[in-house]
Image (cartoon, rainbow, N blue to C red; front, side):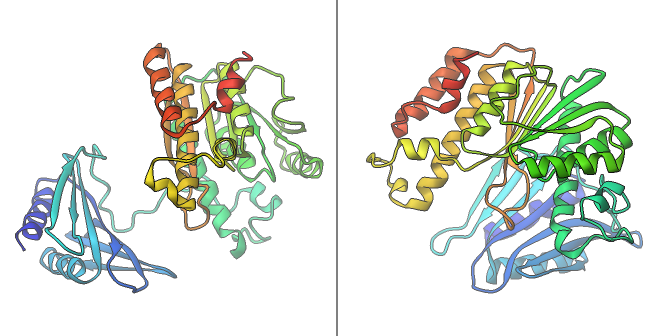
Length: 386
């Protein structure tokens, strides 16, 4: 088909012009176990190849192809296995859509990447938490030999992803010489310990971290582990988010704080003029409960699961807009793979010197509320107390 020909020509041209970033095949068209395919450039024995990572439900398989072989494999996969192909280049994102019926569609959008990825075949992702870090053993993530315990492998990967995200956000924010961090809802402290170790011991930053949680037994365990690790400036306090009164916060973190506890944490961060606010919202009940029994005109909201997801998006979008109104540049992105949890959205706000256009933002918030009949968002009420 001509559309597929055009797509493969753009693929070859992007490689020739050194504009190729990566390519993905998604939306399986059959019932096989193959979920998607990730394609990148690799250099093997001074020869440029395309490396295909076939992501099955239970494992990944990698095969490397010469350019002609790769084009033939892509055509075969598009014919038999997938309905969407996305080509990422430094100039544009090019999407091929293959509907069950009707004409194929080729769309071009704004480029997601400014630079190509490394083509090293032996490329290894940088690990910010290494398995010989003492705190990992104290917290039960590694055994006596420094090997990650199998059932903790997901937590170990999550820690490294978390540190990667935090490092990038901290570089973007304007931080003082001594960074005060508050982790609201620190739980068992895995990520809190990892952040302290990475910032203090590996990056050499002067940081003080306080973890707060309502569960006294976890606070005792975390403080004991902190002493055992020799982490002098990492401590934990048993109290609620509302009860935490100190305003010297440079980085506020609230991961999976339930329902409106996320809003209480954001309010604390804004009140403290924190340079960075990081949340992973959870249990979006406030707006859902407020709209219970209300008839919705949008046909998508006929279905319970879509209603839940849409109201979660509305909740977090209003949170982001309120943060923007208070001079934070906001980002919303996936934190961890949704293979393990659907509560995988991270909302981050970086304090900005640029004054926001409150009138426009208020209009945007009001339009969302009007669309779904939302009377108020809890964070709006919390901000009135400042």
